[in-house]
Length: 265
Image 1 (spheres, rainbow, N blue to C red):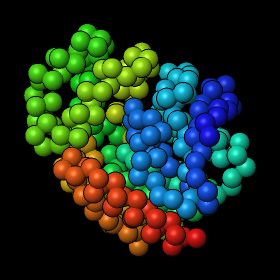
Image 2 (image 1 turned 180 degrees about the horizontal axis):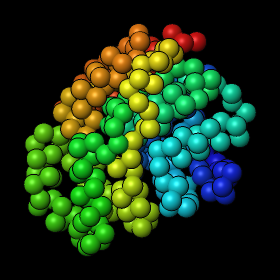
Image 3 (image 1 turned 30 degrees about the vertical axis):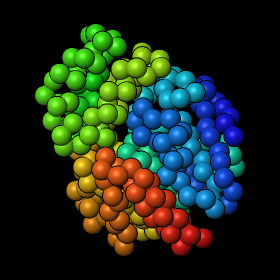
């Protein structure tokens, strides 16, 4: 089921609910649709995915509000809209950053945490997100044809060798619907961060699963290892590289989520 609701500041956001069982907020990555988190989500649970501002069917809203902190507030607003006080929560990349922030800033609303392929630890604007900044630069200057210039540049060539899945994903931003919205997101979110310090992250006591994978420059396994070391008793699971074997990656992803979520219920 896909529906919409309005945030306190008047932004209309879309959300997707599927499955049966305990509710889990399961968030997408930057520029993704609900299909991304749905692909790896196991049966036996209800998946709730908020489409962040500027994503899929959600409005962009006030540009000054585009931030990971605001995306987190929007998740809380949707929880209130649905009458949910506390849920298991997690996401992929950007979704992991949103979930980590909420676990730190609103611990009573998050009862279990899943950080999949995290793109941030604690600092804003990590070096590994600079490829998104380059896409924004080419998109702002040249529009869709900026794709050709981006693919001829060193950043894309290096990524194609080290992390082909990342490279392929970045190219899709040039043909994404609503290019003005895409540009606004890429000019802001890669330079942002979860807004949680290492000391704050280390105080988390909730059950936590951290998922990493190889061949993933934007989401280095070292980020996941670092977060798992900071969070007491966190479970660290390494998945098969998506760029090497997507079917194995998806299957292992679902299994890891199912085992962790089942243990929490």
